[in-house]
Length: 189
Length: 264
Image 1 (cartoon, rainbow over the protein chains, first blue to last red):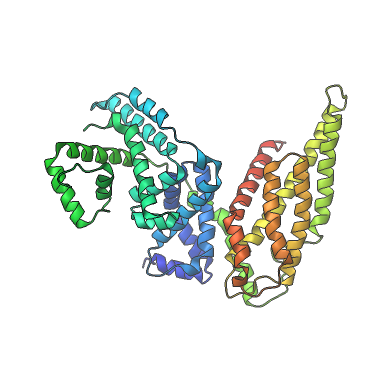
Image 2: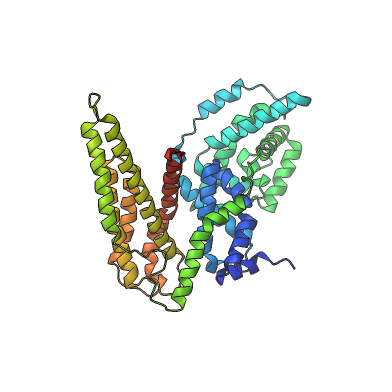
């Protein structure tokens, strides 16, 4: 029978190293995705995932059986990523809306394309999304990704990030505004 | 809301299910009848759909195994140490940080060699000096020895911090022997820090300084039996991300060592 995640956590908490290994092997790939979306750098992501597991190991005793293991892991990973972003000079990478506006005006309006041209356009869109995400401030990107990808509520995000609900909302609003400015040429309304 | 257009912010909150049921019903009713808000709503959804289209790179092949390989020495060491502690065995001479000689003694000689050869290189390493190659070699050798020692020092410090942060609340945590080892690390770290400063390596110097402060606290602190008593030290380690910074620094040193290592 497949052992549940909470049961594995319970064994790991009791010092079963194989149980901890099972958690690492089962969830590391998922955590890589979560962290990468926030820091957008493969090497840093790997280090942060490692740091996440060290914190998980230290906090095994705090896991509440009624919680979802993956949610718990996600929160720890997000906090590690936030700590990293805060301590990194990259967090101050300034967003210059003018740059984005300029790129946006240079882009051509979206027109449905067949075949190869469409693939090229899809590549351009992916590149623009990536570029814009990288231009968001760390706090904007984190708040937005937690809401949009991880599906956390704004109040949950606020408590994770140590922000008031209104400030969290505004981080998300700013992120979406920047995304709209950058992606408008690709959107057919 | 019927009389006015809906703001993009309210539409976004509604999209994410953050609006109340009443607000949601009201907004949907308005959007049905207002071409402008309908267009805004469509645009917003289209943009968010594009964001979803961004692929996230998958972790490298074998990432899970590599992650475990990185973690195992840290968490296994902790488990073994804990087992020993839970058995109240105080003869821990064979645990991960036993030394045959005080670290500071070795640190002093390596630091002296490194700084000496660095200074030698600075004084003698002029364009007209015939012995240029040999002084440069001496400096490089000294620097490499120092880097290797500092790397080991950082790894030892990292293990101390990991043990403290991961310590089981029910186990005895900080005994006289641990404080002696921390004091030894402090003494060695000071020498390495001065050498790093001499050699203009500000990153290493800063990290060593931060590590030293916490080690001093451990070395000078009382013998404590419960990890609860260590909350301040633990918070300091965590707040300053010392374990993470130590790992990043040692990984960088190892990578550099790999690059400069001769292939013969």
